[in-house]
Image 1 (cartoon, rainbow, N blue to C red):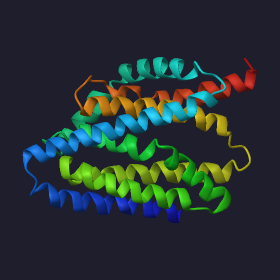
Image 2 (cartoon, rainbow, N blue to C red):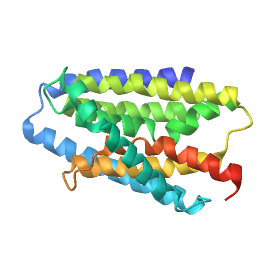
Image 3 (cartoon, one colour):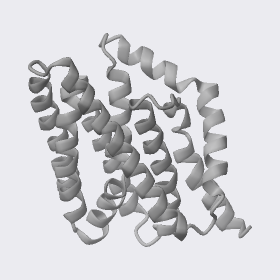
Image 4 (tube, rainbow, N blue to C red):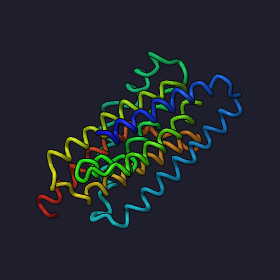
Length: 227
């Protein structure tokens, strides 16, 4: 868990540093930082899809996952529930920043493969590299959205910790094709977040989050029955 703890601390420290900078940054600089983060999210999302889609065993699986996941998320109204919860503690646009931070920090390939490598090989290279990247990203996000971005560090700890523990319990049964499908859906969600930040198109990104659960579930069903 060393790598995950390091990753979490870099986000928290970066959020503190960024929130300090926030007080001295003019409005126009906040705008350019938001534009920069929007572009970063778009590039990362496209990279994830382009990198993983050609290796997909079931190229249409992500479409079905997003459709079913979106319907579930809309039914549960996750976007509104999340925004209402965050707005109880902050009157700024923290909800948008926090949802983007959680997607950027948790759904990247390094954040998924890192704890798996740590559990199977005690190799922390991915997590240390991811921690440095997330620390820098959290500084930029917190300078725009505030100290609340640090909450994403807690979410990441739970996320990576869960992957780490599941990998230990299911050692030898981890299917990298399944991780590939998860990365495709995650990349699309990150891309949607970038478009949201740039105000190109408003997506209810959080309502699509269940697709991350639907994708591996459908994959396992297909593999089990060999459709």
